[in-house]
Length: 213
Ligand code: PRP
Ligand code: URA
Image (cartoon, rainbow, N blue to C red; front, side, top):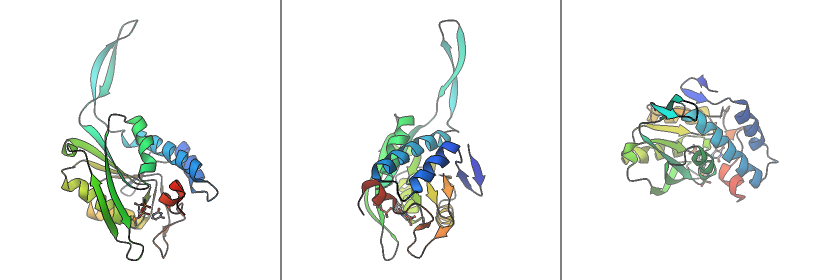
């Protein structure tokens, strides 16, 4: 289920929304937080890949010949923004097990909020693949915009961004810098607070995933 809010695809499937609500709950500990993020990412991957090209094939059943369809066209790469994007990776790969995986290390400088880049390893053939960049939080949009820039610099052209919770500011920034990149989210929240955390959001995704706070 997909609702178009402006230029963003909001995946409002009841299962996604139920699990997101549990994920937001401050009482949810790291184990359940990891499990929920993994499940939400898998469900969202189903919608993000909805426009995947298929080709007709015939298949012989025990009873006759069926006209079927199989996935065709370009292969996929999934690019996780470290650290919190790793929390979504397993779920996405369960649906798309043949995807190649890239990693981009970016964190927000706590003072300036600017993205600090420390790692980038992408599949060599990324220019031949459709790319899904994953990160649960789209706050100022600095990290996602930078990651998409690295993917483009290495030849990636067909790129989608998959996040769980977005602030309007982050959506505006990514759309401003990368108008060609569709954004898929489970929720668009109200705003950023004075520390550029999403309100109400779910807190610091990396710290909640890994229990580092
Ligand atoms: C979080 C999150 C995004 C970024 C979003 O990462 O996972 O990458 O913040 O904020 P932005 O839209 O304002 O750039 P963080 O910087 O906390 O790094 P971590 O995942 O390594 O903890
Ligand atoms: N990063 C997070 O993990 N959470 C926010 O709310 C903003 C940035």
